[in-house]
Image 1: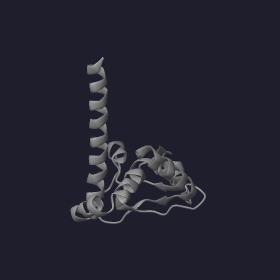
Image 2: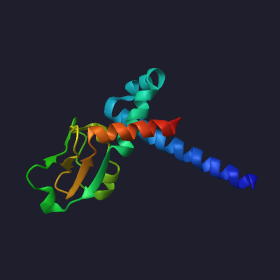
Image 3: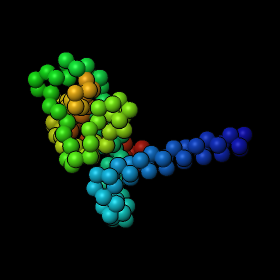
Image 4: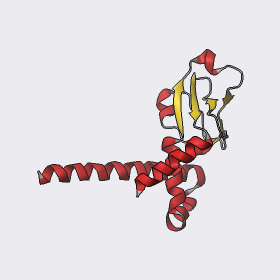
Length: 140
């Protein structure tokens, strides 16, 4: 029984470390390793916020070519030139910190991802505020 409990705790810790490492990698890619080091030392709460943004603030949905090209759906554009994302396997590894986008106060914001037929749907600011409050409660 103790072995089972130990294994569960071990795998939970490994999963947490892996997820945190992925967040840190994406923050470093977007803002640089010096910024990441500064966050860890001086503002770990902001690092937790980035973790939330990277994992919970949006959904990636396949709309199809025609629907994703409709008027009103803007293309997600990069803040810096780091390459295009057009394949599904790349879309799943999307680092949203590399892109320019805005989040509406009360409704979802939708952006198309290149000409792939995939869109990214950001939750509204009001929804994100509620979700983040719940997210931070789970960290305690």
